[in-house]
Image (cartoon, rainbow over all chains, first blue to last red; front, side):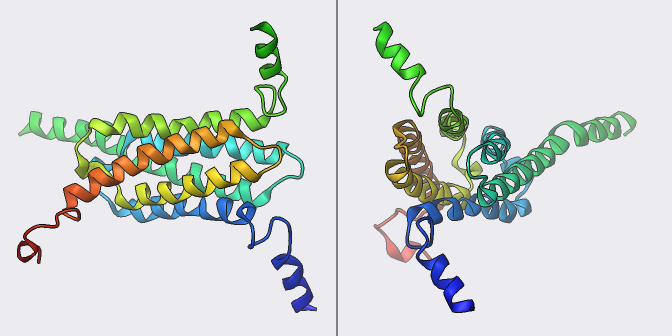
Length: 110
Length: 107
């Protein structure tokens, strides 16, 4: 039972012997790299790069639902990209625009 | 001229289809990479840049064999491959990976 399902997957025209499998699968690397970069200080985050990651994630998430057939793997990987990109952007924006006010207020009082 | 433009507009991978606008959004990676070319290399994420190099390499192959063949996607990823490889080389150089002389200096 299980082995025939596995065989069906292995021999699928979009299965692991083909680029149709590995290219979208490897796209997860972008989100994984981004998650690993959550530990980096926000000064090192690149605004243009994270905007690009978030925007492509959002656009492709929508398109993966309007193509035939719907591609849930592509949808989920792009949702993850949009999520990690938006989070990185929020970290950098928080540091650049919101902690400055605190520092400015502290220096005024001090 | 007008007929070539019309052919483009009505192409199966043209601007009336999703096969066009997905790759358009991917140009964000290239523009971001180009904007980052003049920034200090300490800001480059080696991890993300290396992932981008593999990712665009895979999608160049994908765009060639997918049906319908998507040359625009191929061009997009070929461009991203170039930009990301350049950024990777800047990162590697700044980290000291490309120094071959004076191996005793590297501990």
